Image 1: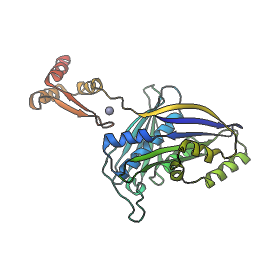
Image 2 (image 1 turned 45 degrees about the horizontal axis):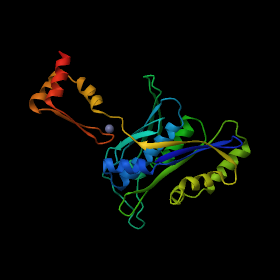
Image 3 (image 1 turned 135 degrees about the vertical axis):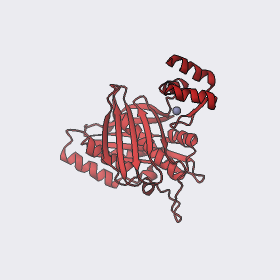
Image 4 (image 1 turned 30 degrees about the horizontal axis):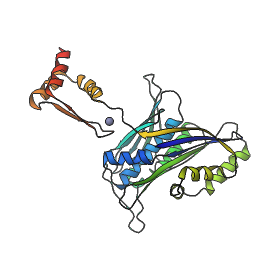
Length: 290
Ligand SMILES: [Zn+2]
Protein backbone atom coordinates (compact mmCIF):
# COMPACT_ATOMS: atom_id res chain seq x y z
CA UNK A 1 0.00 0.00 0.00
CA UNK A 2 1.26 3.46 -0.90
CA UNK A 3 1.75 5.95 1.89
CA UNK A 4 2.60 9.50 2.82
CA UNK A 5 4.61 10.29 5.94
CA UNK A 6 4.37 13.76 7.46
CA UNK A 7 7.32 14.99 9.49
CA UNK A 8 8.53 18.17 11.17
CA UNK A 9 11.98 19.34 12.28
CA UNK A 10 12.24 19.35 16.08
CA UNK A 11 13.00 23.07 16.08
CA UNK A 12 9.84 23.73 14.03
CA UNK A 13 11.66 25.46 11.16
CA UNK A 14 10.71 23.01 8.39
CA UNK A 15 8.26 20.32 7.59
CA UNK A 16 8.50 17.55 5.05
CA UNK A 17 6.19 15.02 3.43
CA UNK A 18 7.60 11.90 1.80
CA UNK A 19 5.52 9.69 -0.46
CA UNK A 20 5.53 6.23 -1.92
CA UNK A 21 3.15 6.39 -4.90
CA UNK A 22 4.31 3.27 -6.76
CA UNK A 23 1.00 1.35 -6.69
CA UNK A 24 -0.97 4.51 -7.48
CA UNK A 25 0.98 5.16 -10.70
CA UNK A 26 1.11 1.45 -11.59
CA UNK A 27 -2.69 1.29 -11.35
CA UNK A 28 -3.03 4.42 -13.48
CA UNK A 29 -0.74 2.92 -16.13
CA UNK A 30 -2.76 -0.32 -16.20
CA UNK A 31 -6.11 1.43 -16.42
CA UNK A 32 -5.08 3.88 -19.14
CA UNK A 33 -2.53 1.69 -20.95
CA UNK A 34 -0.15 4.64 -21.09
CA UNK A 35 3.13 4.64 -23.04
CA UNK A 36 6.38 5.83 -21.40
CA UNK A 37 6.15 9.66 -21.59
CA UNK A 38 2.42 9.59 -20.89
CA UNK A 39 2.97 7.30 -17.87
CA UNK A 40 5.59 9.60 -16.35
CA UNK A 41 3.60 12.80 -17.00
CA UNK A 42 0.41 11.32 -15.53
CA UNK A 43 2.32 9.74 -12.64
CA UNK A 44 4.07 12.98 -11.69
CA UNK A 45 0.77 14.86 -11.80
CA UNK A 46 -0.91 12.22 -9.61
CA UNK A 47 1.92 12.64 -7.06
CA UNK A 48 1.65 16.44 -7.28
CA UNK A 49 -2.04 16.28 -6.42
CA UNK A 50 -1.37 13.82 -3.58
CA UNK A 51 1.08 16.38 -2.14
CA UNK A 52 -1.39 19.26 -2.50
CA UNK A 53 -4.23 17.24 -0.94
CA UNK A 54 -1.98 16.33 1.99
CA UNK A 55 -1.63 20.07 2.63
CA UNK A 56 -5.40 20.42 3.17
CA UNK A 57 -7.66 19.62 6.09
CA UNK A 58 -11.25 18.40 6.37
CA UNK A 59 -12.95 16.91 3.31
CA UNK A 60 -11.23 18.78 0.53
CA UNK A 61 -10.77 17.83 -3.12
CA UNK A 62 -7.86 19.11 -5.16
CA UNK A 63 -7.97 19.06 -8.95
CA UNK A 64 -4.69 19.64 -10.80
CA UNK A 65 -4.89 20.50 -14.49
CA UNK A 66 -1.68 20.60 -16.49
CA UNK A 67 -2.89 22.56 -19.50
CA UNK A 68 0.07 22.23 -21.85
CA UNK A 69 0.31 23.09 -25.53
CA UNK A 70 2.19 20.02 -26.77
CA UNK A 71 1.41 16.45 -27.78
CA UNK A 72 0.48 15.02 -24.36
CA UNK A 73 -2.54 17.33 -24.22
CA UNK A 74 -4.06 18.06 -20.81
CA UNK A 75 -3.21 15.98 -17.73
CA UNK A 76 -6.01 16.05 -15.16
CA UNK A 77 -5.96 14.55 -11.67
CA UNK A 78 -8.23 14.79 -8.63
CA UNK A 79 -7.08 13.94 -5.10
CA UNK A 80 -8.90 14.10 -1.77
CA UNK A 81 -7.86 14.36 1.87
CA UNK A 82 -8.77 10.68 2.44
CA UNK A 83 -5.84 9.53 0.26
CA UNK A 84 -7.75 8.80 -2.97
CA UNK A 85 -6.52 10.04 -6.33
CA UNK A 86 -7.72 9.54 -9.90
CA UNK A 87 -6.52 11.00 -13.17
CA UNK A 88 -5.93 10.74 -16.88
CA UNK A 89 -3.75 12.13 -19.63
CA UNK A 90 -5.47 13.25 -22.82
CA UNK A 91 -2.96 11.43 -25.05
CA UNK A 92 -1.90 8.14 -23.41
CA UNK A 93 0.28 7.13 -26.37
CA UNK A 94 3.30 9.47 -26.13
CA UNK A 95 6.50 7.43 -25.97
CA UNK A 96 9.60 9.56 -26.58
CA UNK A 97 13.04 8.67 -25.25
CA UNK A 98 16.55 9.96 -25.74
CA UNK A 99 18.29 7.50 -28.03
CA UNK A 100 21.64 7.51 -26.20
CA UNK A 101 20.43 7.24 -22.59
CA UNK A 102 16.91 5.86 -22.86
CA UNK A 103 15.72 8.72 -20.66
CA UNK A 104 11.97 9.33 -20.97
CA UNK A 105 11.15 12.87 -22.07
CA UNK A 106 8.21 14.70 -20.53
CA UNK A 107 8.63 18.49 -20.42
CA UNK A 108 8.85 19.13 -24.18
CA UNK A 109 5.68 17.08 -24.70
CA UNK A 110 3.76 18.96 -22.01
CA UNK A 111 4.89 22.24 -23.56
CA UNK A 112 4.08 25.69 -22.28
CA UNK A 113 0.81 26.54 -20.63
CA UNK A 114 -0.82 26.63 -17.22
CA UNK A 115 -0.63 24.80 -13.92
CA UNK A 116 -4.18 25.11 -12.63
CA UNK A 117 -5.29 24.03 -9.16
CA UNK A 118 -8.95 23.88 -8.16
CA UNK A 119 -9.57 23.52 -4.43
CA UNK A 120 -13.04 22.40 -3.39
CA UNK A 121 -13.75 22.63 0.33
CA UNK A 122 -17.20 21.16 -0.24
CA UNK A 123 -18.89 24.55 -0.09
CA UNK A 124 -19.93 24.47 -3.75
CA UNK A 125 -17.62 27.38 -4.54
CA UNK A 126 -14.32 25.93 -5.67
CA UNK A 127 -11.27 28.16 -5.48
CA UNK A 128 -9.12 28.48 -8.63
CA UNK A 129 -5.42 29.28 -8.58
CA UNK A 130 -3.07 29.27 -11.55
CA UNK A 131 0.61 29.74 -12.39
CA UNK A 132 2.43 29.34 -15.72
CA UNK A 133 4.22 26.08 -16.43
CA UNK A 134 7.94 26.65 -15.83
CA UNK A 135 9.40 23.57 -17.51
CA UNK A 136 6.51 21.15 -17.99
CA UNK A 137 8.41 18.63 -15.84
CA UNK A 138 5.62 18.90 -13.20
CA UNK A 139 7.87 18.87 -10.10
CA UNK A 140 9.37 22.28 -10.87
CA UNK A 141 5.94 23.54 -11.87
CA UNK A 142 4.49 22.45 -8.53
CA UNK A 143 7.36 24.06 -6.60
CA UNK A 144 6.80 27.32 -8.46
CA UNK A 145 3.04 27.12 -7.85
CA UNK A 146 3.55 26.60 -4.10
CA UNK A 147 6.10 29.39 -3.81
CA UNK A 148 3.94 31.85 -5.80
CA UNK A 149 0.42 31.01 -4.68
CA UNK A 150 1.05 30.05 -1.07
CA UNK A 151 4.00 32.38 -0.48
CA UNK A 152 5.86 29.50 1.16
CA UNK A 153 9.41 28.65 0.09
CA UNK A 154 9.04 25.06 -1.06
CA UNK A 155 11.21 22.37 -2.56
CA UNK A 156 9.57 19.50 -4.39
CA UNK A 157 10.97 16.31 -5.83
CA UNK A 158 8.81 13.78 -7.59
CA UNK A 159 9.36 11.18 -10.24
CA UNK A 160 8.33 7.89 -11.80
CA UNK A 161 10.98 5.33 -12.75
CA UNK A 162 10.20 2.73 -15.41
CA UNK A 163 11.73 -0.71 -15.96
CA UNK A 164 13.02 -2.08 -19.27
CA UNK A 165 9.48 -2.89 -20.43
CA UNK A 166 8.36 0.66 -19.52
CA UNK A 167 6.31 -0.65 -16.58
CA UNK A 168 6.31 1.41 -13.38
CA UNK A 169 9.24 0.35 -11.17
CA UNK A 170 8.95 2.99 -8.45
CA UNK A 171 7.16 6.31 -8.00
CA UNK A 172 7.30 8.81 -5.19
CA UNK A 173 8.36 12.20 -4.04
CA UNK A 174 8.72 14.75 -1.29
CA UNK A 175 7.69 18.24 -0.28
CA UNK A 176 9.94 20.31 1.97
CA UNK A 177 8.68 23.65 3.28
CA UNK A 178 10.06 26.39 5.48
CA UNK A 179 7.58 27.17 8.25
CA UNK A 180 6.63 30.65 9.46
CA UNK A 181 9.03 31.77 12.17
CA UNK A 182 12.06 30.02 10.66
CA UNK A 183 15.23 32.05 11.28
CA UNK A 184 17.67 33.29 8.62
CA UNK A 185 20.13 30.59 9.62
CA UNK A 186 17.42 27.93 9.27
CA UNK A 187 16.56 29.14 5.76
CA UNK A 188 20.24 29.19 4.73
CA UNK A 189 20.59 25.62 6.01
CA UNK A 190 17.44 24.64 4.11
CA UNK A 191 18.79 26.07 0.86
CA UNK A 192 22.15 24.35 1.31
CA UNK A 193 20.45 21.01 2.00
CA UNK A 194 18.37 21.32 -1.19
CA UNK A 195 21.45 22.10 -3.27
CA UNK A 196 23.31 19.11 -1.88
CA UNK A 197 20.43 16.67 -2.20
CA UNK A 198 20.99 13.75 -4.56
CA UNK A 199 18.70 13.64 -7.60
CA UNK A 200 15.20 12.39 -6.82
CA UNK A 201 15.69 9.48 -9.26
CA UNK A 202 18.78 8.34 -7.35
CA UNK A 203 16.86 8.45 -4.05
CA UNK A 204 13.92 6.55 -5.53
CA UNK A 205 16.35 3.81 -6.66
CA UNK A 206 17.22 3.06 -3.01
CA UNK A 207 15.88 -0.16 -1.45
CA UNK A 208 13.77 1.89 0.95
CA UNK A 209 13.21 5.22 -0.74
CA UNK A 210 11.09 6.62 2.10
CA UNK A 211 14.06 6.30 4.49
CA UNK A 212 16.50 7.54 1.83
CA UNK A 213 14.37 10.65 1.26
CA UNK A 214 14.09 11.39 4.99
CA UNK A 215 17.85 10.96 5.44
CA UNK A 216 18.56 13.30 2.50
CA UNK A 217 16.06 15.91 3.73
CA UNK A 218 17.05 16.03 7.39
CA UNK A 219 20.68 14.89 7.44
CA UNK A 220 21.78 15.16 11.08
CA UNK A 221 18.87 17.40 12.00
CA UNK A 222 16.45 15.87 14.54
CA UNK A 223 12.85 15.48 13.37
CA UNK A 224 9.56 13.93 14.43
CA UNK A 225 7.17 11.72 12.44
CA UNK A 226 3.71 13.23 12.79
CA UNK A 227 1.59 10.75 10.84
CA UNK A 228 1.51 8.01 8.23
CA UNK A 229 -1.48 7.73 5.89
CA UNK A 230 -2.43 5.36 3.07
CA UNK A 231 -2.65 6.53 -0.55
CA UNK A 232 -4.34 4.80 -3.49
CA UNK A 233 -5.63 5.26 -7.04
CA UNK A 234 -9.38 5.12 -6.55
CA UNK A 235 -12.09 6.51 -8.79
CA UNK A 236 -15.42 7.54 -7.30
CA UNK A 237 -17.51 6.91 -10.41
CA UNK A 238 -20.61 4.70 -10.37
CA UNK A 239 -23.47 3.72 -12.68
CA UNK A 240 -25.76 5.90 -10.59
CA UNK A 241 -23.57 8.95 -11.06
CA UNK A 242 -23.58 8.58 -14.86
CA UNK A 243 -27.32 7.90 -14.77
CA UNK A 244 -27.73 11.29 -13.12
CA UNK A 245 -25.64 12.86 -15.88
CA UNK A 246 -27.82 11.19 -18.53
CA UNK A 247 -30.92 12.42 -16.75
CA UNK A 248 -29.85 16.01 -17.44
CA UNK A 249 -29.96 15.43 -21.23
CA UNK A 250 -32.97 16.65 -23.23
CA UNK A 251 -35.79 14.12 -23.59
CA UNK A 252 -35.33 14.04 -27.38
CA UNK A 253 -31.71 12.90 -27.00
CA UNK A 254 -32.71 10.15 -24.59
CA UNK A 255 -35.43 8.96 -26.98
CA UNK A 256 -32.94 8.91 -29.83
CA UNK A 257 -30.53 6.77 -27.78
CA UNK A 258 -33.36 4.40 -26.91
CA UNK A 259 -34.69 4.06 -30.47
CA UNK A 260 -31.59 4.29 -32.63
CA UNK A 261 -28.79 3.05 -30.38
CA UNK A 262 -30.87 0.65 -28.24
CA UNK A 263 -29.01 1.97 -25.20
CA UNK A 264 -26.00 4.04 -24.21
CA UNK A 265 -22.35 3.32 -23.39
CA UNK A 266 -20.34 5.57 -21.12
CA UNK A 267 -16.65 5.19 -20.27
CA UNK A 268 -15.28 7.02 -17.21
CA UNK A 269 -12.36 9.10 -18.46
CA UNK A 270 -10.64 8.92 -15.05
CA UNK A 271 -10.56 5.11 -14.72
CA UNK A 272 -11.76 3.64 -18.06
CA UNK A 273 -14.63 1.73 -16.42
CA UNK A 274 -17.40 1.05 -18.97
CA UNK A 275 -21.03 1.48 -18.05
CA UNK A 276 -23.88 0.15 -20.15
CA UNK A 277 -27.37 1.60 -20.02
CA UNK A 278 -30.02 -0.52 -21.72
CA UNK A 279 -33.36 0.54 -23.18
CA UNK A 280 -35.06 -0.09 -19.85
CA UNK A 281 -32.66 2.32 -18.06
CA UNK A 282 -33.37 4.99 -20.68
CA UNK A 283 -37.11 4.27 -20.55
CA UNK A 284 -37.12 5.07 -16.82
CA UNK A 285 -35.24 8.34 -17.36
CA UNK A 286 -37.68 9.39 -20.09
CA UNK A 287 -40.64 8.50 -17.87
CA UNK A 288 -39.22 10.57 -14.99
CA UNK A 289 -38.96 13.57 -17.30
CA UNK A 290 -42.56 13.57 -18.50
ZN1 LIG B 1 -14.14 6.20 -12.88
